[in-house]
Length: 72
Image (cartoon, rainbow, N blue to C red; front, side):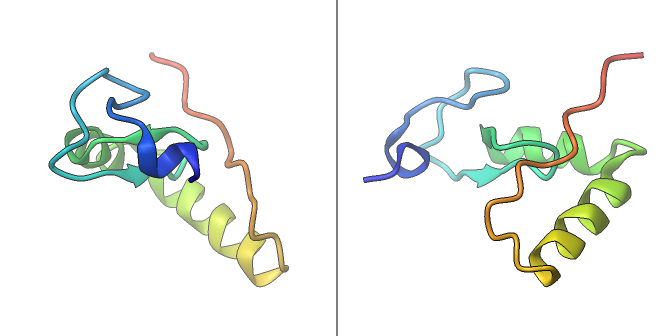
């Protein structure tokens, strides 16, 4: 089984993933839904989603992301 589905804790905050998980739009971190909500508020989020969409259209099903933005 892929680590994404078997891990128990969020790669970003260390929180429990039992209430849901998703992959970050910035990198391949498996994150909780609270971290997902936080990353959706970042100004770089739209560019990250656009880059991921373009990668998939180009046939890259394993896009690694644009990288999580550095804290300001």
